[in-house]
Amino acid sequence: MLTRNLHGVHMQLCIHMHKLYLLPTHTHTHAHALHTAVTGVIQVNATLDRETIPQYELIVMVQDQGNPPLNTTGIVRIVLLDENDNAPIFQNTSYSLTVPEGSYDNATILLVASATDVDSGSNGLVFHSIVSVLANGVTIESSPFAVETQSGAVVVSGQLDREGVASYSIQLAATDGGTPPRETQALVSYLRVHQSLYY
Image 1 (spheres, helix red, strand yellow):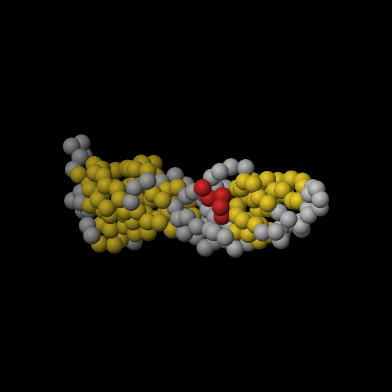
Image 2: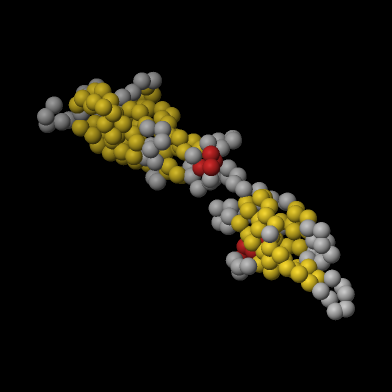
């Protein structure tokens, strides 16, 4: 068996045989992306997507020009390597919620705004962060909110006072671990603080 790892765009794999015929072991509609000629070159003639088909396995037959002709078969397995071609995706691009005013301790979770990335390895790792926070429509440098890097949980610690700030807007970002990294943003567009009956 011959195995090669490919990134999937304009790459060639040379097999030194007189004649080469390919018989895909499956009939997936994208199998036509691999072709060959009598030179023994397997050439990619279309963009391959690892997230759609992670690998191809081909049965190859080589036949000489004798009389009678003789042939033999082998297996070529082509494994696609991951490229950072997908950005993280939030479950929702916009969130809204209402919370009671009061004092919050121990990083109380308000919501989980998590994102996922279909790439593999470090390309598929996702890190959540807060880009900016608006209080009553004005950008503030320091806020009672934070986001957990791995889970995407938005938490609050400290005091929420409706008379001081009635609403917040939080811009979130999800960044993957690829090089260069890809980023997607989501917005907690309306976080309203309402008066607590017990405060």
